[in-house]
Length: 221
Ligand SMILES: [Zn+2]
Image 1: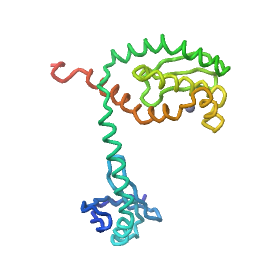
Image 2: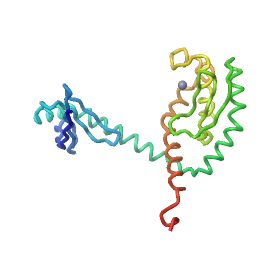
Image 3: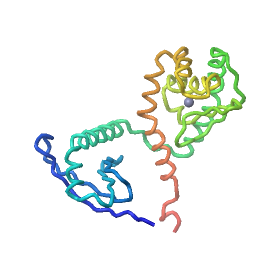
Image 4: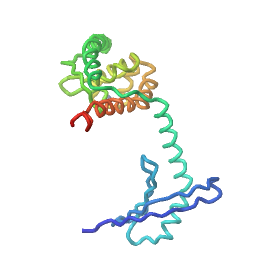
C-alpha cells in the first residue's frame, strides 16, 4: 500500500502581491500525477503532489498561484467576520422543544395555504431539529421542517414551505422547479441567499446550547 508523506514549507509572496506575509503550506505527497492546491475552511494551504515532484517545482507552483491563495484567504476572513457579526446566542434543548411545539402549531396552516396556491397535495408534516436540513419532501409527499426556522423571519419560513411544496411538482432543483418557486415568491433568491448565509449560525447555536446543557464535571462529583 502506498502511503502519503506530508511536509510543511513556506513561500514569501512576490512584491507584486503587495503582501509581505509568508504563506505557509503543507505538502501531501501521494501516487497522484499532478500538483493541486487547496485552501481549507480554516485558511490553511495544502499542496497535493506526486512523489516525483521536487520541492523547487512545488515552490514555483505555489508562487505562481499566490494571488489566488491570498484571494481565497481573504474570502474566508470575510466569511468569518460576517459569521461573527451575526451571532445567535446558544439555544438550550428546552428552547428547541418549545420551538418545535410552536412550529407544529404555525407551520401546518401556512403550508395548507401555499399548497392551495400551488394546487398540490401532501401527506403529513413532521417537525425536526436537524443539523443540516431546513426542510424536506419525500416521494410520498411527507414534508418535514426544521424547528429552528421559528427563530427566523416569516419570509424565510415561507420560502422553505414553498420550496418543499414545489417539490410536489418537480422532484429536483431544475429551472422548472425554480420557476414554480418564483411564481409564488418572486423575491425567493433574496430569501434563499439569507438562509444560506445565516442559517448556519442557528445550527451552531443549537449545538452550543446542547453542549452547555450537559452536566459539568463538578456537577457529577
Ligand atoms: Zn429542494
